[in-house]
Image 1 (spheres, rainbow, N blue to C red):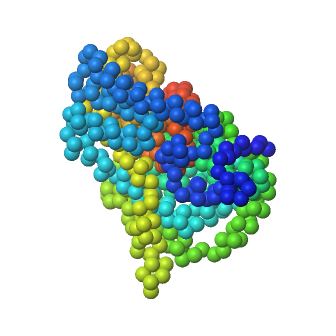
Image 2 (cartoon, one colour):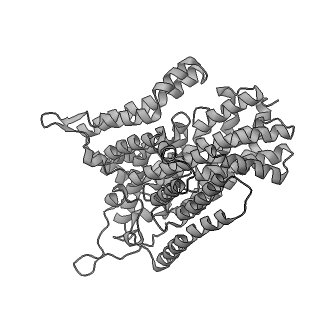
Image 3 (tube, rainbow, N blue to C red):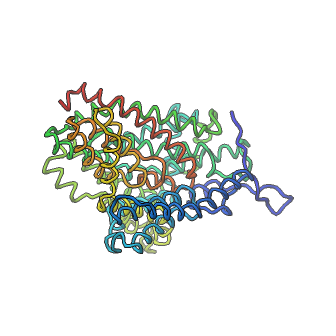
Length: 545
């Protein structure tokens, strides 16, 4: 069993004894975008963080100015947008300002430098995804406030054999995430499981604290096991979303574009046969990467079963507030799942699916479910409800702003034509003529674009670029376009790459540097798996002939 080296700085008022950290408050209290003064760092960590942030403060504007000054053969609005985006990426990576503020600075620069009018730029803040965030975060807040997340965590840890090692806990949680995200949207899956993940981490951290494995005043938000668990939640959802055509919007976009270009439509069953071995190997690669790069502080957690049993006994029966929260949560999940079930039964191109999916928009469902928390009473005579607005106001608005800016950049990449310019220019420069070369280019371009914008925007931008490139080279575009569709669900390095990345980053447990390192490694492995396995599975199933 390895020992956590904790950073100690706070002492109590009596005799210099370190003050005991309130683990649940630290993990569940919401501490996302913390300044240096709000973190407990070793001297070496503090020097690194201070240097990284200082460099970013000067490098971001310098990168933008230099790029804007280059004599490039491209429309002015595209060059300006690219220069601003490069500067914002530097701000996101180096964090001289909180990450949401970096995105907002980029949005302001877009309007000030006349890339697009303000109304057009700000419109994506009203997208369905933003409302999915708001509703899901309010539901999560209720789960945390009333202890339902803690109850779920103890229930999961009490499953036979699961609670014996940290690696089993992480892998089991990842498998649950993958299975759910195959039919529920990735964002919704991560948002509804995040409180449970935080609850599990709190249990492990308290166990370490009580047994003296960690010092009394350690910082539970800086545990490697927490990083591995949170990134498994985010990345596992992306892997599971590839399993079915309805698992994530890029799948539907890519499938429709491929059918339009080739006349061949991939059925639900054919998609799953092609995707299953790829997803299975991706999950193995994911677990390996996360557990190697974020090696848990402890491996064996013997005695956790007794600890969990005693804690579950203290919880007692479900309270009225917990039951109400569970009702709102269940209603939301059922409505989120319903379009996927209808697609499975009637097909995603059926009138039934169109009717249901048009009405059960995931953003509307999320805010509807959250609204139930303000309607279900805990004490009717006192007019007390499951949640009050002061509770809801404490959700992570910074993460909502962050992803809103990511959607803005994605929309502008497509609308300005910058994404097409990048794709066409790269294809002409590289002289792509073979299936493998075009497929590799499709995967690389989709991953790069999905790092700085939403997966949906990446698929909508890259697949229409790849199809004409393949046709011009006299190659069937089926495999390259499908590879671009799969790769569009990647982009694991930044919080703005996917909604699920933003959600787990909002937990305050995942440092940006560790997300970049883990995400970069998984991007490479995932790209290799797509390149090697996708053409093989397409041939096995008999598609793309």
